[in-house]
Every structure is written in C-alpha cells, then in structure tokens.
Amino acid sequence: MQQAIASPTSVTPDVQIIDCSSFDETTMNLFLAPGPNPYKDTEEFLLDCEMRADEMPRFVRRMLLEFQVRSNPEGILLIRGLPIDPGLYRTPTPSDGLRSASKTTYVSERCLSMIGSRLGHLVSYIQEKNGDLFQNLVPVQGNERVQASSGSQIRLQFHRETVFHPYPPEFLLLFCLRPDHDRLAETTYASITHALPLLSDTHKDLLFQPLYRTGVDYSFGNIQSDKTNGKVLPVLYGNRNDPFLNYDEDLMEAMTPEAQEALEALKAAIASVYRGVKLGVGDLLCIDNRRTAHGRSSFVPRYDGFDRWLQRSFVVRDLGLSAVDRKGDRIIRTAFN
Ligand SMILES: O=C(O)CCC(=O)C(=O)O
Ligand SMILES: [Fe+2]
Image (cartoon, rainbow, N blue to C red):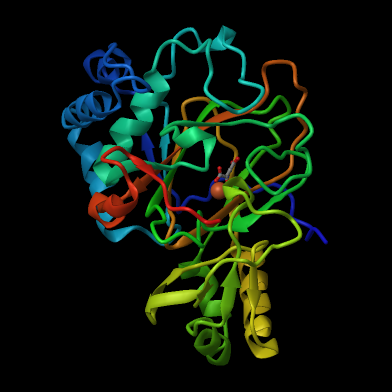
C-alpha cells in the first residue's frame, strides 16, 4: 500500500543554499566554456572540471568543504542558479532516460562534475544506464508505477542510494535541467538527525543491530517478486548520537517481529520529519547519502519531449575502496547475480 504523503512542502529556512545567480561573467564562464567531451575523454573532462572548480568563488568552495566534512542537520545542500546548456530549451528530454544524442554541449555535466569534485570523486555502476557518470532521470512511458527514477505517477519511496552495495556513494547529486509541466514533482528528503529524537531507546538498540535484510535495486536487476535478496545490515551504524543510515522503505525487511516494529517506527519518524524541494532549472541538490534518505512525489508525465529531466551523479570520498571492482575507470562493476 502506498502511504499517503502530505501536501507539498517547500524548502525550509534551515536548508543551506548556495545562490549562484549573482556570479560574475568570469565565474559563469568556468561552467560555460567548452572543454573535453565527458563521454569520450572522461578522465580529461574530470580533471579539467576539478581545475575549474579551484577557481570558483571562495564562499562556494568553503560551503562545499563544510558540507563534505561536517554535513548539516538536513544532510542536503542546495545550489541554485547554476547555468545550463544554452540550447537546452529546444533539446528534447530523452524519452528512454539513456544518453541524449541531441545534447551536444556539456554545461550540465560540467556543473555536476565541478561541484562533485569538491565533495569527492564521481563514480557510476555498470548496471545503471550502461555505467554513464551523468545519468538522465526522466519519466519513461510504461513505467508510471515503477519504484525507480523512471516512474512518475506513484510516490518514489524513501531510500538511501544503493544500501545493498559494498561501495555506495557518500553523496548523490541531482541537477534539474527541466521541471515537470505542472511543477508537482518534489524531491523529498529526511535526515536521520531529525528522525532519531522520535525513536525510543529500545527501537534505536534494535536498529543498530544487523537484523535487516536489504534488496538489490530494480535498476540493478532485481525483480519485484524477490524484494529482499540482499545482505543483512543494521539500519543505524556509526556514532550512537549521530548515526549513519541504511534505509530503503521498499527494499528492506526485518528478521524478527521486534526489529520490524523498530523499522516501522523509523518509517513513521521519517514520514513526520521529511521535507521536499521542487527543483527548478539550474538547481543542483547535493544529498549526504549516509545521513539523509530521499524520494520523490508523484507527478504526471506528458511524453511530449518536454517532461521532467534531471541529471544524476554519484560521489565517493575514496576511489581506492572500489578499485578492486573497477577497470581503472570510474565504473564500479560489482556483480550481483
Ligand atoms: O526524481 C527525483 O527527484 C529523485 C530521484 C531519485 O531518487 C534518484 O534518482 O535517486
Ligand atoms: Fe534515489
């Protein structure tokens, strides 16, 4: 059963925002000036972006550094007013969510890469979008009721990205190239910092124990009938007073009735503390994937070439951890079946 979700909320005053709308021309050009092709000369593109990011204004670098090192109570940082590709208004949203043949400039990829380079290193997963580092998230016809980024007409339930994976990203970046027609789609988020005070000590104790079976994501080849086929994990880990979170509302199941009760309590806590942001053109949302679960409200696609279009990238702090499952590139190839 889909849980009802309260009416749309807007960004609360507590959300940290970097406003780029007053950047001068030189700064805007860091993002806009042509450079290597991200899909052909990937490593060169990433290095170029990292060097460009060194020249961003000091306050931007400072806020990104603070977010990387200390995070914040919401576990999100919203960057507003970034430039997008100049011709994008006539570039259709790619209907299959794969790479767009008609997008021949790379401003949005540069925004993701430059911001991401201050938080860590971009990586991708071979099972998702052929391992593209910059992934188009769009509503796909026929997937309206699917629990994945290609869905639309049902709420995308709260999840942390790739809970089941040995090398999950520490940060997730969502860049809005085009909002939905009706401006209904809201990216939802809930941090463990806000949810934790609503849990009893008994429930916290249970959530810190490895009593929860996760599921491999649908985008990694899972099938609906075998939801919890992943490894067993604790939901909370790390510092007892400031824990990290493994959570997937859809793909997670407790192994005892008491543990299930604690998971339900966390679900209720998340439902009462969550907030949402309607991403507009040029908004880049950075999510601390260890502290904050995210999801999406439902919305109505039209399949007219101008549906909602986000680009997503994943960031890890340490490339070395996943080196064993990469072939010297950025694609993590861990197999799950
Ligand atoms: O579409 C959104 O706003 C969020 C999508 C999402 O959860 C994801 O791509 O990981
Ligand atoms: Fe997600």
